[in-house]
Image (cartoon, rainbow, N blue to C red; front, side, top):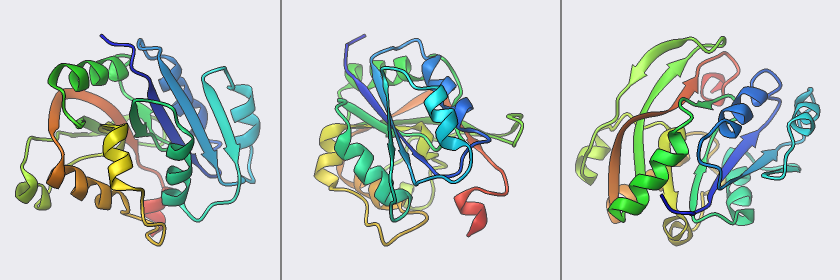
Length: 209
């Protein structure tokens, strides 16, 4: 295991129902060399109070207006200091206390640019409703589908810097810009491990659109 820092950006907007669970799934990790940057969109519910309640030296809270999740992520990664980057939506969680340790071990051992793993879908109460396996593919196969959840994707800073950031005109599905870049140009490794949980509920960005 190395001492590489992981930067976790959490885009957040009116997430009072789930933000504490998201943060706690990070705090509970066995690997402790990480930072959390919460990019809040000037939430109007109780989110800010909950964030302040859960503040610690590893967590930075930025509350300002943004132009959507892609913009918030661009800003968060620009502020980050980690060698390894990722993002976790405010309603999603890491599934295991070994998620970060497993990621760091695979990225360093295999010398790749990014890793991705399996995930599950959970409901509003955190009950697992679906198991989502990912698989190893080349670029052409990726275009047909790889069943990859953003919370289960981790990448080196150099890959992000080369990509240059998301186009903020895209309000949903913007991540596929980056995934296209990663699968076309970068070295990858599938981790045969359940890394994160995607939460389904009526107020998710995808559900709203």
